[in-house]
Structure formats: C-alpha cells, structure tokens
Image 1 (cartoon, rainbow, N blue to C red):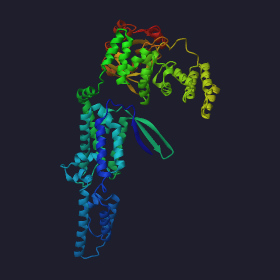
Image 2: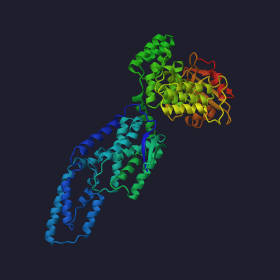
Image 3: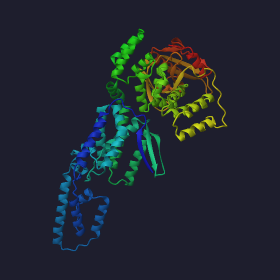
Length: 624
C-alpha cells in the first residue's frame, strides 16, 4: 500500500512566500551545480573504483582501508569484501604482500583525494570532521539525485510557505537554518566519528513539519492511497495526526535499522526541534507579542483613496460620483471587493463583481462567493453571469444553507442560453424542484432540457430517467409545499464563529473554509431566541444586504452554540458573555440593530416559536 500527502486543505497565504521560494531556488541551484553539471558528482571516478575492486579481487588477502569501505561502498558491497577477506588464504611471501598492500593503499588514496575534492563532499556534512566545517550550514542545500530533492521540496512546499506567512520572513528563515543545524547535530550525536557524508534538506524540512504539526494542528491534510492497481483514493486527516504518524515511522526506522543510508536521526531531531520551537514561540507569547503584529504590519491592505470618496458620495446621496470613484478603484485593483460590490449595487448589474466572483471560483472558494452573492442583493442577476460561474455557484449548495431559489434560478438562466452546460443545469434544477415538491416546475425544466439540440445519449438517458420517476423513487411521496412566504423572508448563510477581531468576524463555512466579515460591511445585526426540541436557542444574524425591489434581505447566521463564547470570554457566564460579544459588534458597526439597539443593550431578546417566525418578524418589512 502506498500512502502520501497531496496538499494542505484551505491553504492560503497573504503575501508571496519569498523566503520559501528562495530556499527552494537555492536548493535547485546547488543541485544543478553539484549533482547535475559535474561528470562525477560525488568525485568517485568509475574507472578508479573498478581498478580498486579488480585489484582486490586478485589479492583478497590484503587489508582494505576502513575509510574506503565505510565511506564509498554500499552495504552489500561492503559485506562482499569483508566475506572475501575472511576466506582468502595468503599465497605470497611477506615482502610481496607488503608491496601489493602499498599499491592497493595508493589506489585507494588517489581515489579518496579525487572524491574529497568534489563540491558535494566539500560542502556536505561529515561528522568525523568535527564542529568546524561549512557542512553544518551548506549540507541542507545539497541533494543526492532527483528523487531526493523532489521529495524534500514537495514536503517543504506543503508546510514552509504557511509557516512563513504566520511567523514572518526573517523569523522563518532563521528557524529553517536553525532547524537544519539542530537536525544535523542530532545525526552527529549518534556517531561523531562517522566518516559518512550527509546532505539534504530533510532535517530542516522535518523541523518545519514538527512546527506545522503544532502551530497548524487543526489544518487538514489531503492524503492519497494506492493499493496495488486495484484501489486508490484520498481522505483527510488533521495535521497533528499526519505529523505524528510520520514521526512514529521515523522512530520505528531508527530502532529497527530499516533505513540504511538515510539520516533518520536527523529527521527525528528536526521534528523534535520544530515542535519544541513552535510550542515555545506560542506559549511564551512571542508570536502574539512580536511576530503577529510584524506580519500584520507587512500584510495589512491599504485602502485606495477613491474608496473613501465613494463612501462620502454615498453618504450625501450622490450615486454618480460614488460609481465613478469605484470605477477608479477597479481600474487599478479589479478584485477590490468593496468597489466591485458597491458599483454593482449602484448599477444593478453584477458585471463589476464578476472578475472577483470568477477568481473565487477558480480558487475553489465558493463559500466566499456565496457571501458576495448575498451582499450583491438585487444586483445579483443570474441571467448576467457567465455560464460556468453560474453553474459552479448553483452546485455549491453546501455553502449556503438557505439560498432560497437562487440555485434554481442560476440553473434556469444557463438553460435558457442553450450553451454546453444547459442540459446539466436544467437537469439539476429539475431535481431541486422535485426535492422541494414542485413537480410541475421540475417537469418544465426537464422538457426544456429534452428540447435542447445535440444531446449526448448519456444525458438523454439521465433526463428520461428523471422524467420517468418524477425525480424520486415511486415509493416516496411528494413533499408538501411550504407555507406561503415561510423561510423566504431572508436568505441565510449558516456559519460558526472562528475568531472575533477588532474590526471583523472570522466565520467558518459548512465547507470547512474560514472567511472574514468586516463590521463596516454590515447593514444590520439581529438577535432572537427560537424554541426547539433541545431547548431555546439564540440566533444572531449579521445582515449584509437589505435587498431591493423584489429581493429579500441576506444574512450570515450564527447560532449560540456556534459562537464559542466560553473560549472568547473564559470564566464569564454564558448570558454575560453573549452580551459582551454583541456589545463588541454593535460598537463597531453602523448597521441597524434588530429589534432595537436599546433592547439588545439591555439583553432583551425577542422569543419566537420557529425560525420562520423570527425571519418574518425581523425581515418581512425590514429595511435599513
């Protein structure tokens, strides 16, 4: 069975990982200069090696220098020579033997001199040379062959850029070098007199893996497996478990002596150093006190001057001036979120926001794209979205817990254009309608799909199968239609609170992704208590759009048990902690509080028998 990591899920960095790129580039350059370009990378000439072995085969009773045996021979060749020497009878007199020994020694000496002169051996780490050698630093940039460097750089790619993003370039660069040297010191401690050359970035990379396993313990690693040629697939595990399994494998290799030629102790030492360093940086408060502020200072986004002009224009009701200011921003920064959404709302056209929506879709960030769709409100016109983008958004239903009929509208819009995705979109829209009990609407979608030209036989079969069963097994009755208007007063994106910052919420989506919601983008905040079978539950809505004519409001909803109040306010009673949380938000947003600012400040949260009742009370006639 083959098992290996593929990627870190939801891995994002705020700036180019320049140090990580520099380390990889240095390794690549060193590899080209010391391994690819030289004819004999390790300095060992094949003809000299063959001459030594030929001469020894003819005179097996001679003594081979231990330096040659252990420095330059593979384990299997070493065993063969030792076995030949034990069984070889001496067939010459002492004087002849001395001359032959001198000749063999000279061959080995010439071979060793040439080998030691190679860049690989001069820059690699040889424990027997002691503490004063350049190899302590340079060994971590050298590699023995393509698989060696590609394997090390892949593991470094998984964890290095993320650590650099968290700790900053200078600290990460120093940590990488220190990790490599501490790993080498662990290898040195096993056998300080070893003449065997060590090279490779794996010790430093192991230090990065150890630090990553602690600092990013909750990150998920996508693992791939292959069982022969019969079965293959992927699964997710947390980073701490991935790092733990890898470390356990290295310890097993050390105690079982099953990794001949691999500096296993360097791997173990690197992991221990990295894990310990990350723990110390965290527990001492150094990251929060020094590293994080420095990184934030370097990565904080600077607002375009025209953004403030647009806000001022909107405050005085001058939409034309606001639109022009937003266009100025977008000419320089096409993916500026506030400008894209603001201009789209003014023009009631999603076109300004489409580049950003497409960028999010390409990155697989459909949850954030749905948040944008909610913020666009009535400007989010499915008929004006590109087919592929509309299809991707419609398919990401797990990103929006209550998107209303927007997914079906998106798919219907694609179907009306009769593009290559039309049949797929209409079929999916039909299945949604059947699941909601709207059989007539579902059959209409299937009719439209069936009428499309040039349908593939497989698609025709899927359409006919859906038509024949009405979209569901015959034994399952159609679901009754929802009460008039119920659940349609607001579009909701259900989330959990990940972090409460000074100027924003960090929320977790159903897909596992984490996103930032700025307080200055909220148009309202609502809180209410809803009865349930498990008891009363408080719901907090962060309203991102009041909608426009014919549109419903849109909100991010977090239930009380998803706020993590005990972590935000340790030791504070739940009701008081919630009041603190709500006060923090209300103090930083100009949005409309529901039911009122006074009621929320007093902790008077209205009670409702159902979520639909809460939606109707807060949103049916609500506007900012």
